[in-house]
Image (tube, rainbow, N blue to C red; front, side, top):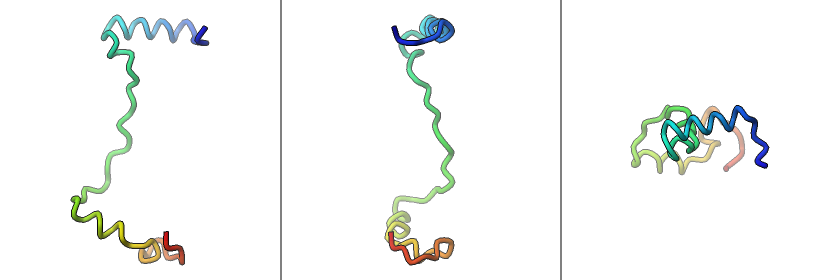
Length: 63
């Protein structure tokens, strides 16, 4: 009916038995750790600059 394999259903049953409904919630990754630890006051200065002002993106584009 849901096009799931017996292994997947068995895994869901084990997760439910171990942790209840919270065990069935998706465990999404937290993603890549942040490389920048700027304060809120530092962001507006960076966001107002166009990419053409940055040496790594020396193009005529202004977006």
